[in-house]
Length: 384
Image 1 (cartoon, rainbow, N blue to C red):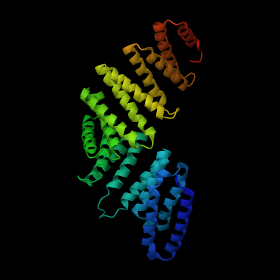
Image 2: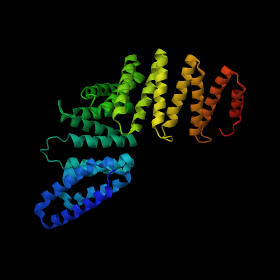
Image 3: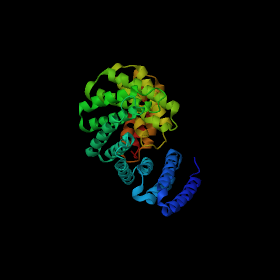
Image 4: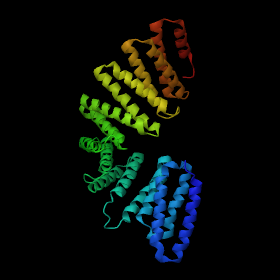
């Protein structure tokens, strides 16, 4: 972690010097803008290394060039402040942080020179912030504007532009959101086509390849569930998710980010099991659900959902092979699931009922008095 206090002290001293120079000699304003812009870029590279609690200081620093230069502030300074506001939103997803970021990205675009050669970065940033607002509010207007911005950004990134794949991924992601909102099949087909192009542009060493793999897998699963029921879509999605997980495991410094992919792959394997009946699919799903639970914090909100899927998968595997080890594991995780849910909650009642049914299956298989007594205690438990 960087020594942020030292960085703040040094930057503040620099700002004091620049303020005195700027106020006394107007002609040096271009130099002030350059120096402040350099400072902003330096801070931007360190955003991910600062504690979330220190982002407020970064915001104050980034407001400084805007205050110093007023109407003379450059689009770079507005963009730098917008970026740190988005960092705040990622840490603390409040509408206030997001709204300020959107306003700053709009101001950035408005300050670009008419002859500015490539505004695709600014268009994509505003589009992504509007997409975040759509996710929070459900307002289709935000989504429509984001799609328009992504289309416009893509126009500035023809092949072989090095960042064309990013624009394609943004647009494909937004079109998939619109499909989910409106049910428009052409949007989903276009999303699959666009994300597939992005995927082909990203070699295995590309840092964004795993995201493209996840996007394409998700779109194919949408088509499988709601349109095609084609086993080819399901099987391609499984292969894509497997590659994505392998890449993330090699490169990710944030293992929690693996959990959604692991859960998605477990889900897809269980669906493949329903179609093909392969024991290997259930075994694979159990491994992936278990790994997702292992890397998440114990009280992560996704844990009860994933644990329930692990229990049902273990139950399926027991039914497939009648191995009591699998049934006992299902019971163990179902007991954990009961503990995850508060007393009196409907989910706890459902989990208790499922636990009773699993122990009854165990008792039928073993006839052991201990299992029968456990069933009786569960049924008498007044804390359901």
